[in-house]
Amino acid sequence: MNPTLETERLLLRPWRDTDADDALGIYGDEEVTRWLTPAMAWVPDVQTMRDVLRRWQTEDVVPASHWAVERRDTGQIVGGAALVHLAPWKDLEIAWHLGRRSWGHGYATEAGNALTRWAMHRGGVDEVFALIGPDNTRAAATAQRIGMEWLGETDDYHHRRLELYRVRHQDLTYCDYDTEVTEQENR
Image (tube, rainbow, N blue to C red):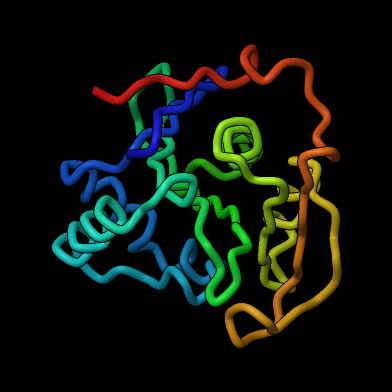
């Protein structure tokens, strides 16, 4: 099971069945899902959302996992984040999905930084990729804030043209992993 990661403002924790309503507020919003690659489509109802959450809980193999992104001060779920393997390659993609009300607060950057650092320091990963639609300027800016470099366009992964970003372990700029991200054992 993936660990819970704690940042200054956020908890990245495993999704629970009881999160289905909150998750549907994100993945059931067409304005949010229009930006997601074909790997995550619009979810029509709470039962389908429960099924997706259960699939994530059973299919995830560390370091590839899905996390709920929760505000520490309120316990409100503001989005989701994931590290997923890009088939048929072993490349690892990072993704962040925020509810519209949570856009513009820096949560995607904070969650992306936490996952990137965790994957490289605890998950044994040397590089992480992001695939971003050509019109998704917000996600491209987030990738750059995480320290990712633009590698160009590709249609290798999802059978559509996407912008490819990458960050390698040696490219990370940070003080000390343990002061930025606290990893908690899940009970």
